[in-house]
Amino acid sequence: MAKKTFVVGAFSDEAVLFPAVKKVRTAGYKIHDVYTPFPVHGLDHALGMRETSLHTAGFIYGITGTTTALSCISWIFTKDWPLNIGGKPHFALPAWVPITFELTVLFAAVGMVLTFCYLCQLAPFVKKHTFHIRATDDLFIMAIECTDKTNTDELQAFLSSTGATEVNLQHAEAGWWYGRYDQEQQLITEPKATVA
View 1 (cartoon, rainbow, N blue to C red):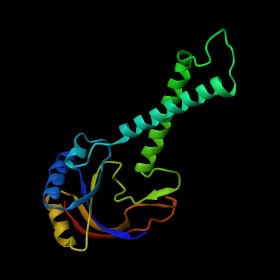
View 2: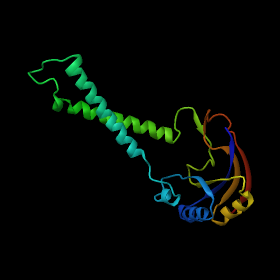
View 3: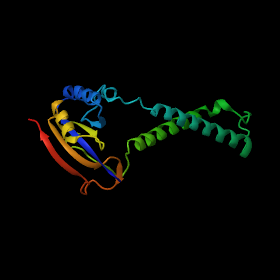
View 4: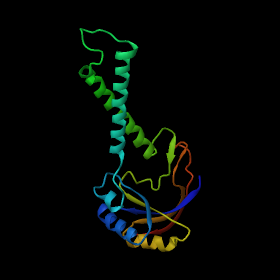
């Protein structure tokens, strides 16, 4: 997998992070992602992220479960193995409501979990680059993706001016790859500027 260049800034407070995100986006830089130790309300809007389509996927999975349940039950009780149960008709739709509901919920739940894991690239033995060791502890990390036209020195100075306590240049694989976290990461870090 090809490596990309990132300028990574660490912020100590979300009050400093929000204006920095707005300044970086206004300057025209592409923010790869922002990693925070806890969910930050409104950060997705500040980053310009669109609303998730996970609820649409859940609806599609649910309809698939409903269709599967009704199709299978109606085929079993009307064509494959019709039984006379207390004189009820073979197509007894009200009696099938519980299993139809359960299959709808099962398909929606399992489908949404698998979709979420795929979109977030979460799976056993899938390894992603960690931009900063304290990203899940007490720092807010902003990773800005660089292009061939990006002046990295200028960008690092700009990020320092927005309130970043640490700024460095990293070359890393942007996607995910198979590997183990107990082995050494494929990472080259070039510390450039540190602000006290």
